[in-house]
Picture (cartoon, rainbow, N blue to C red):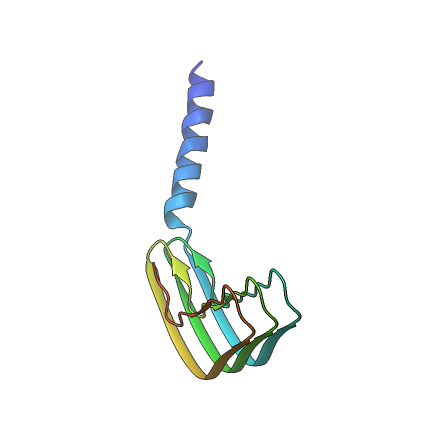
Length: 117
């Protein structure tokens, strides 16, 4: 019985330590990237770039990044460069970011850049 409790306690301690100490970190250098979508109906585009979940840090250097969407109906676009969720920090250096959307109905564009929630 004592051995079983010790193994269980060790497993729980390792799990909790991993959850507390694990912090995400990302560094992204992105140049000359583009998303293009031509043709209508249920359009959707997305790009997140920095992406860290939980307490963490992201560093993003981005230049000449573009999204283009041509064609109508349920259009949507998103660029979210720094993205860290659940605390933490982000550092974003960005230049020449562009979004273009041509064609109607349920248009939506999002560009967030710094992002920590």
